[in-house]
Amino acid sequence: MEQGGESLRYALAELERFSRDAFLACGADQPTADCATRSMMHGTRHGVDSHGIRLLPHYIQALEGGRINKNPKLSVARSFGAVETLDGDHAQGALATYTAMDHAISLADHFGIGAVAIRNSSHFGPAGAYSYAAARRGFIGVTFANSDSFVRLHDGAERFHGTNPISVGVPTYRENPWLLDMATSAVPYNRVLLYRSLGLALPEAVASDKDGRDTTHPDEVEMLAPLGAVFGFKGAALAGVAEIFSAVLTGMRLSFDIAPMGGPDFEKPRELGAFVIALKPEAFLERHQFIDGMDRYLGQLRNSRPRQGGSVMAPGDREWAVARQRECEGVSLDPATAHAFAALSTRYRIMPPSASATAGEDITKR
Image (tube, rainbow, N blue to C red; front, side):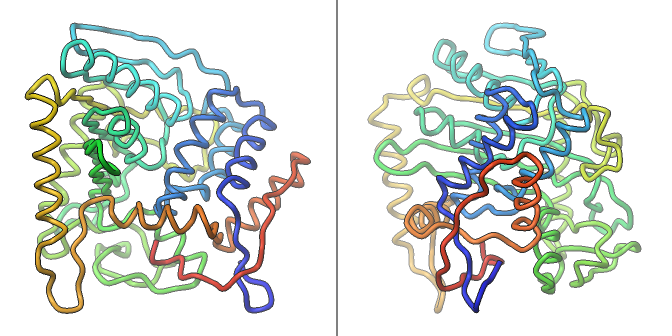
């Protein structure tokens, strides 16, 4: 939000504190408050604002309504060697997925690979948060999830897949991980909400109206386009990969059977699935060979010749640059999120996040 021509900016620590306070005030347990905040702050810190702290009011609404269990009891429902199935007991999705990745890492430390299917979960925020957690501990992390139908098929005119993210994090040991975090739709729906809040037109070929025709007007959006524009069959197929891992292998709901994230029903659990994999590089080759291979790959990538006016970056490079800036300068909030935070502060009688006025930023480029 803006005041006197300037943008109000919030320190990351203040947003993190406010998030934990709000979760605890609504009755959620400490693990839920910690994991949900950790996941959202990964998004906000690294510029993935569509899945960052702006999700806090939604999660509070889902906890209050009963869709998400405030005090879940997670349990291993099935195990077979390096494979587990984790029952999330309808926990907030970040709690279930961080727990699953911890289990996958423990399995991978023993077997070289660990795979954990997640049952009875809920929306988990940015998929990259969990692959990043694995990479930070020296493991390759892979994360899949599906969500309620909102993305048409290539040449389709109805919702079929969810935004169905795929994420891979790879440790480099000497620097930040190589990190892929992508929706298989052209954009995540939360980006449509962000543009709607800001009153801005969407980019071309990312969203469609009720008949599957492209539209740049956020208020006309009835579905998203698959990744790839005229080659959208590739995005639709990648969405199917995420669907099979996160729904078929977990026994959970397929995208077209999942209740809409935005309600109106906030009482019934959505029975979402997800899937995480951890791999121990040293199980496949000597540690120094892996380090040298990643160093050579990233060195050649970043030093490759860019086209005129362009820049070459490895997956994650933009995020690390944004994180460095935001650690120093804080972050601005879109108007809808700022108003929602003020309402939560009043409702629960908790201190709102403090802000300072500085020169504005273009938050649509996050």
